[in-house]
Image (tube, rainbow, N blue to C red):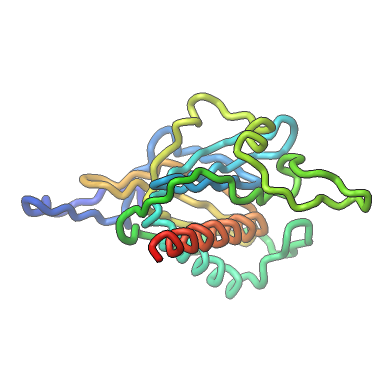
Length: 233
């Protein structure tokens, strides 16, 4: 991904033209953060995507990305297309805990996502999924040793997760650029706004964890669309 600023003539009065191909990287986002899972919340105008790191107690939120409802479909599509390109080059991505014999290589491919439509309205704030198997111990352990399905509340989730004050406000993003090697993905979340696009959050995920994040995003978005269609009927 190029970090150079977009050039060209300024847009005509009353119009806004933004090219997402080139985006500056903010100083706070330049180093990026490694994540092992995600918590997704659905707000009235946006999706709140909390990337967490669970490499030792306590589990902590390393980045919060605020995505408008209208941009989520294109972001999901960009991730799906990048996964297809990754698997065509390196083979099927191993699941979490499975061996991956591919050797790391340089960033191979980038995919962009642009916002689609205007944000829709949804009145509730609900946790949708925890995608790291060892994220937090929510749910009751049955006699068989398995965890029973239990809908956690937002309070249940965040009681067990540390979030620093500088992360709480989150970073806005309505576009995405992705790079990958054989073993990991780099997600650059972009605020695609006039006059300059800027990378507001940079997240690194292992290939298996990206599949789990993608599945959670798709499930959350499908549930949101179902609720919206029911509200319009």
